[in-house]
Image 1 (cartoon, helix red, strand yellow):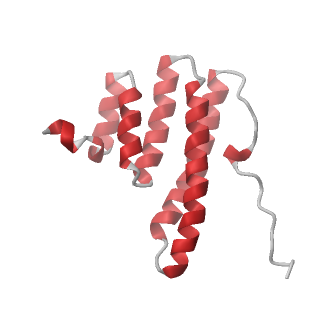
Image 2 (cartoon, helix red, strand yellow):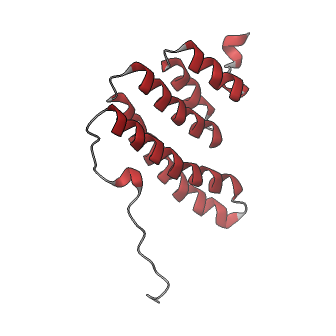
Image 3 (cartoon, helix red, strand yellow):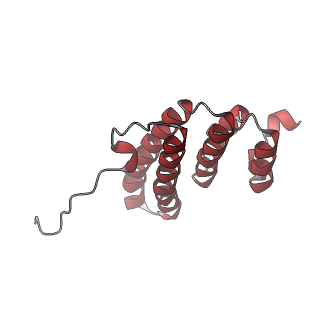
Length: 132
């Protein structure tokens, strides 16, 4: 039945809008992380056989969001703004339990203060192999 099929609006990361400057890029990353955060929470709450199918679709959407956010973050020229934007992506990765990606991204942050705040917020970011 066509009545119940609704057309989804395009994903925030699915549009081809290129940010004009660093501020617009940071805002776009924030929008992407908020939208993908809802997906990460939904993935964490799904259970059962039907959940496996839904999780794969949600995982694809999540991966597309992360990829787009990282591509935008690479274009930010201001170091401090890039650190803040990458920290938002790291928080999203932690929420989705993608710790390997989060740890790799943590190494790209240049500000010691930002890095320390992220580790204090999420102690799971400390690499167990490097801590030993």
